[in-house]
Length: 156
Image 1 (cartoon, rainbow, N blue to C red):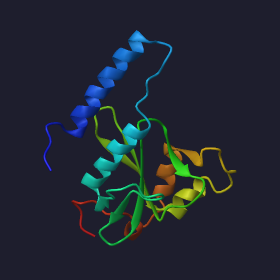
Image 2 (image 1 turned 180 degrees about the vertical axis):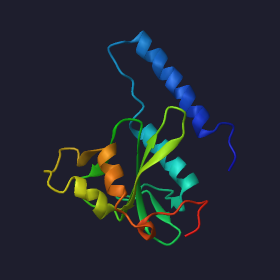
Image 3 (image 1 turned 90 degrees about the vertical axis):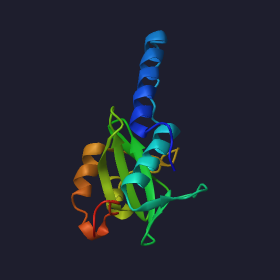
Image 4 (image 1 turned 120 degrees about the vertical axis):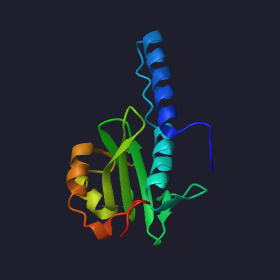
């Protein structure tokens, strides 16, 4: 599937629009986090990792790896990611999108490992916990290579 715009080009254009809105309406921040960032993150993840996004909305997972593992993808342009309070996804893939449209992997592994960051927290009204990027990076370092969702351009 070919398009006339790449994700990095689109992110740069969106950020320019946000900056113009901030100058025109200084009482608001106009952050891009939310559904838009999530959708961009899912597309980036599908391009980079051995996963296929579901066509329709699925309650707890966004994609399936070629080996059948179910994956929830979370993306942010901020300093934290959300994690569900009402369930533990089979696999959790968290990415932080940079200002230039590239991204870094924050967490890649079983949802149970990521859940360690929130295990003692009480349920929230929106059923989402916030986890700092640094905490997820630390937990991701504990995940064995075999328990990670592989990239499309790596073997094993």
